[in-house]
Image 1 (cartoon, rainbow, N blue to C red):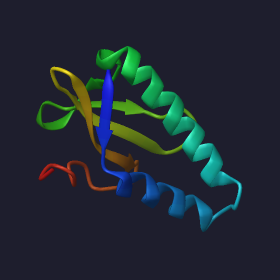
Image 2 (image 1 turned 180 degrees about the vertical axis):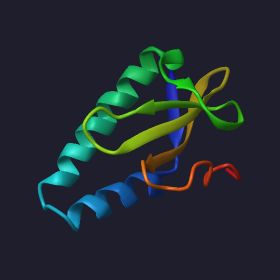
Image 3 (image 1 turned 90 degrees about the vertical axis):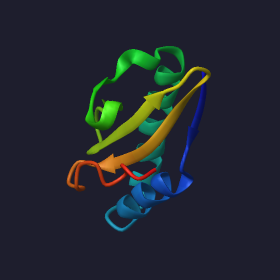
Length: 92
């Protein structure tokens, strides 16, 4: 299944990690890529979340992928840090 999402979401995560450890952005990107591959194969993998969305928690970084399953694609509306306000993405 095709995945569509806001690139700004991943830039924020990489920036957050780059300010803490220069090696960490690669870890974040690997985790994100692996999770997106899983979602492309198994769109219903994430748990039900806010406003009819689904959420997949990344295993080793404090981020979640928030997405909607549509007829032909997965629409990722947020790659949210665990400390961000829930639903900040709801206007997307």
